[in-house]
Image 1: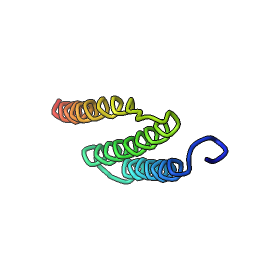
Image 2: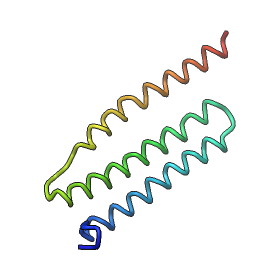
Image 3: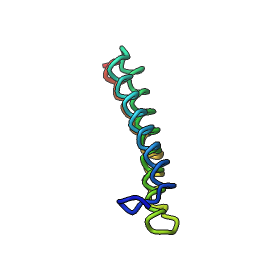
Image 4: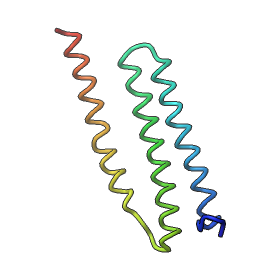
Length: 103
């Protein structure tokens, strides 16, 4: 074990997952900055945030399971709510933009 009490077999993949999650989120934010229209801008942050959140939650599950010495799957509820609410909010934003452009 290392100094913080997290085993090395859990710390290394968790660190890699956290770095990947940060990169996905950064790429999504860069896509929001770089793309030109609202309809193309809405996809990059949604995908980046979803993939980034999956990586961060997987790292959290791994470290929590290693520390508790049993499977910890509370983060799956967060993931479920994210995957249920993210498409709904995206559709509502796109419908609002279409309605605004029509009126």
